[in-house]
Image (tube, rainbow, N blue to C red; front, side, top):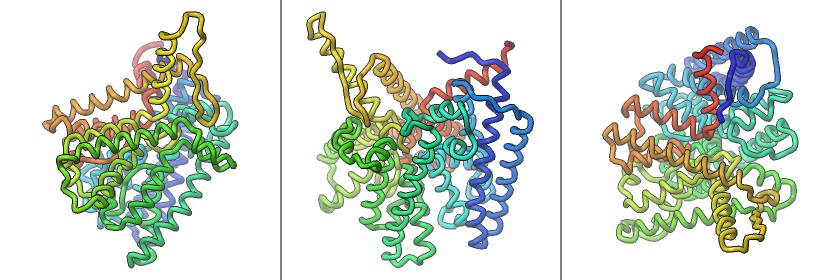
Length: 498
């Protein structure tokens, strides 16, 4: 049930929103300094302006709504959902000022795509974008992958409000007993992999005779968009720009790591590698990858237009991994992808829709929910086929041993149905704008599951109504419905008397 709001909720919500806005403003200093280092004065001024604007907005909110109280659940959820919308608008300002977008709507689309780690893009002339703005596109992916609220949790939010906003950002588990420690652990893992991934990509790029400065820039951006399963690229050709199997291999490795539950990372990092073999979600995830790849392969049985099996595997399996992890990287041209057989495209749609692990940087339904639903079905079948007095207990191992309860199955089923409804609704809207249903469904699932693969619909010239639709889908899909529903209830309650 969506909770009732009163006007007394406004103060705490806007107070904590002010903290988040100030945190985002501080992060804009990173692309500002990149602009200064590269003597890109116009972009640097744009980021400085946005930094000062964010600082001013955040300070005003904190000054006007200065009383700091612990948030309740409805307030925490509202802060999260509202923060993502405000972050989109603030993140879009320097992009819009760059001149690489047709309108502020396009820049907002790009910002939401980045923060939601989707990777659908409407940028123009990407090859000539400044280092500062291009870095900001990827840095937003890195911020959004960990969670915008994690910035506030790490530096600004304290007390009893912590858990409310953490859960509001579609985080289902506490990795460590303390939420602040959990937030910092997630940042620690991400920054550690950032160093490792950047070093690997840098070595590969230098081996391709790319200058050291540009190789480092590409390396950092490749990692941030890959680890956070966002799929943005420095070049418009995406991963196909590099024409390098090593880039394919290393990006695939990091996107798979990014799609793994942070709790699993913690258990393995603390000396329990056997979790990789015991974890129910991981085993189901690997099974799902193989099953959806089988569907893709079946689609090419009568349409095998590859010079050899290696070429086929490199292209088809990479798109499948990209879809299932939600990264949206592609090593083939969009026009080639759009010519795939229908069954292969359906395999990719299913993979995108299922998504990655819970409490990871991946989007979609999440494999754990599918697993819980399967366990629930298995439990019901056992009950039906057992004597009346039999007590049926179904368990699985996910970081710890978990007993399947009816409420677990109920919530998993509700979330699965909500995602399917969101996928279909976006597909129908795409059809209403004149696109074929398969392509419209593909794009809808890609937006809702925060993937970023495209069959060519997403472009600067697609209808504004469809851009708004995909922005909403990316937002809802990333936050997994509940906090968005609570925010809508809050906004509606402001119009009605208490």
